[in-house]
Length: 465
Image 1 (cartoon, one colour):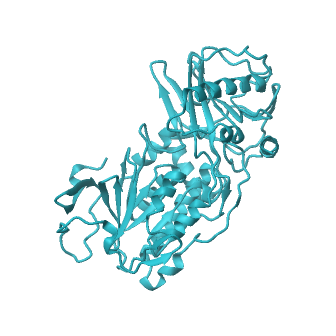
Image 2: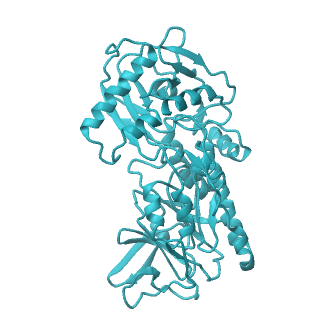
Image 3: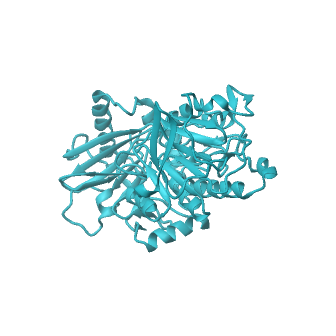
């Protein structure tokens, strides 16, 4: 967190006040004077200027001059939001990232640690690849600082019955040292003027006099010159639906997202992997309840020989859709059903007799209700210059860690260019506001640029049809 010396107070009314921490000095009030308390309580958006009716809500249009020292509010602390914040910092723009994570940052760069047995699971992104030179500069920096390393373990395709085929792609596969989540935490530690507020559910964004007011329920978390939506799904749709940004809302609502179950399971003994194929990760084919299995212990602690064997299993998107329930409160009967059927899927994939798999001594079922995008507009970012608001995320380009990073990089530089431009040029910075969507071609657990997974993808599509 930022130093208390960098804290600023914003007085709204005697009945509604809040103190927030922001990095550096706050933007100067537009009139050059001190921030004043409102004389009476009112809705932030009550005095919007130049509002135009569009679609199902009013479009906000900011006519106030752009700040020379803008501060950006970023809602979402996954890869895209964090990289966006880091790139803004490179361009001399301060930001505050709001994230809902209880245990850490990273969104789908998620790692769960269970004590006292020291169990470690990457329970979302399993690894990532890199082909784009813009993302490569981040990857090289992370490797140099010891935040990530190359995963050299054997991975491949596993067909029902235990038939394993190694993937011979030469492109490096990267994983976070000690888990994927620690990479996200390290991005924050590398930044001097970036603040994170978590856990925080921004529930309302409201425009007033050229600024965005971000609130969690009735608690104000600050005012910002621009806002970035770096998450998706129903929460993002709900947040945008009353924002005064109908064009962004329309684009976000076009997005379709898959649901996937994750089963974390720890075993005392190694799994009976097919002979001569001691794989550490496998894309599973022709098993409806299983699309991936990965050995976290071998991946994260390759030199350890005494740790329990911690595996992450993912269902197919078709299985997740058929068994979807509210992810915040999965019924116990569903938990037991999913666990049983996914472990049966492991037996089927490994060619084992039903019921012969060793019972794990620890399990946890998690539903990623907004796992991965299934369609995309194929644009690097979305930005509405009239409302000074943008969107970044993997779904704008595909469904990979690289896509998420490239989107964050693109939006950060786009916004920085916007704030440096003349007022008369603002409209030319509109991007991604009307692009149509097309299907994403990827594995059920995402895209891995540079890897050839065509056969696995075809098998998954057959299960879906």
